[in-house]
Length: 222
Image (cartoon, rainbow, N blue to C red):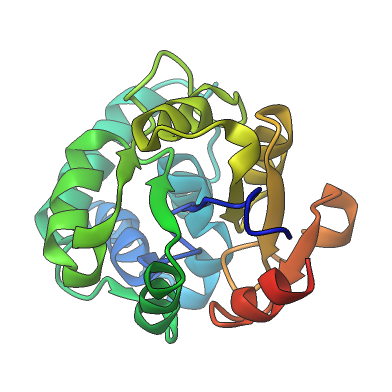
């Protein structure tokens, strides 16, 4: 990709920059054990971690957002997660090195997540390498969440760039849909929480990476 075209890299958060599956799974599993149900292993929760409360409650209780009582269970999940979300969540191997490499290249970077500001802001503050982010856009920052492109437009505005000067990296199909709708080039992070049924080749992303640092090689080829 020509240097005059690429000015910034935007990332999804959970499953792309950070591994939050242990805390998301634990928050849902506590709801099971509080009700006298047997605990489920993290391996059951991990593939759906990128879907947040919807995914975790689906595993824990086999329910959907249309199920009776879902909203109350979701808030209980949020309370559980908020209480423990900083315990074990950590960046994936290579993320710190990747961000350092991007900044040394003179590229801006930012985060665009569907996680609500209630969780995104304290999590971002707790991770030192995120201090250099030029934009942090949460799921409730704009009236729309991904796969709508508006959160990506907002990130570009905060960076003072045109959307076409940014690429978006994410581990969920909705990330690629949002990035394409925003007019950005897109990269699928296949090391994230794609789930057993996901096939990133069907998402029509511009590229795919199997580790954070692989993004540098992709940028050199693009």
